[in-house]
Amino acid sequence: MNVHGGGLTNQIVSKEEMQRFVGMIAEAIHLYSPKMVTVGSASLKWNSNSFSIATPCTGNLWSDSEIQNAFNRPLAKLDFYQVHYWDNSCFVFDPFNLSYSTSYWQLDKPVIVGEVGGNETDYSPAQMLSNSYANGFSGVLFWSVNAADGQGQFSDYCNQKLQFRNMHPSEIDFSCYPNSVQQINTEEEMVKVFPNPTNGIINIESQGLIERTEIYNQTGQRIYTSIAGESQIDISVFPSGMYLLRTITEGQHHLKTIFRY
Image (cartoon, rainbow, N blue to C red; front, top):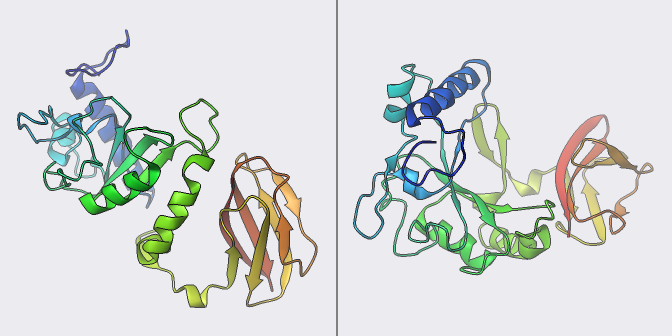
């Protein structure tokens, strides 16, 4: 995108062209889907109106007014912001620096750190989780689960994520419904899976008779089917990564995301 520091690609589009494109996609999603919409902004530099000398951002390119100036429709807007952070890259634009909260960055929507290396050296995964939480950010997505590109893998941060979850269960354990987010009452869950993540056995507890349990990989391929009543599954034979576990109890289907590290 043709903005200050916006990249080295030879195929550059203008700021207004990119904002119009994002606005058109956002409007279409809002018209035909209940899903929330965001776009990855490579740095807080392009997602903030904080123009101080210490952190001279170029402006929030993804605010409602900016997008709608390029595509004038009421549904052309984001539901939350997403910024990225990498070691030694725009270092002063730092969501993990405890001196700068979301209010400093003048962020008017919830914000997640949507891309950060799992093996960064500026901060540990535990610091990134705790600092972003203290600063008012809404979540961290580590790169990556299984890209195998040397920028981090699931084993680099899975334990720290579990520790953070155990410290803040009310922030983590929720179910997403089409038009709302509802807190789970863990005492009323029909099916519980633990430990999760694991590198070996997972245990399944159910309030109903377990008829069958299936495990799917990230391509949607079913890679395991249990026998009736089976309450322990050894996933140590699977590669590290994320899987979908489906348990069928008395005709009801229960989905859980499980992680093998």
